Image (cartoon, rainbow, N blue to C red):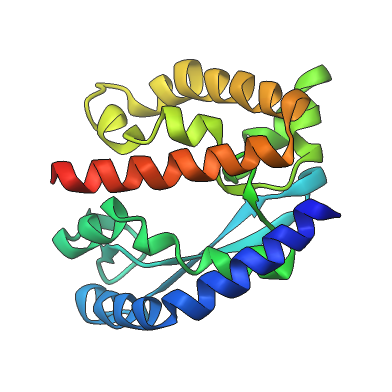
Length: 193
């Protein structure tokens, strides 16, 4: 109950404080990608229930739906995590939490078995211990010859372990620490650029 109350307060305050930034980033995404600027994708949520995640579009598409590339401005939006601001709406709707395993596409969390399925009892989150550890995941995957194989055999199993540890150790104070460390990481990462 406390977690949900915190999620609602956090998302309302976040939307209120960063509405101007969301509108600005959305406008940039519209011009940059020549689309409506919003990206939605089906993700696996709590108890394996599917939901639509909201993001700002950072990828230009050709005439079909084939990915061409992440735009320069799109990379900037991703580096500052501005493309994820619309997920505050997912938190407000109760589909996500501020802290919890990052939501994945079908074929990963929904296929877990045994004790690992406990992760599905958690709402997916904006940040987590796994997202802190792998905050440079895009760069890590780009450096691999077989990015999907590396994700499936190295990253994903480690994320499952980290998320399972979070499941057993979660607390309100622990969540506040994760949020603080996420903010600290974003500030320090953006100072590097």
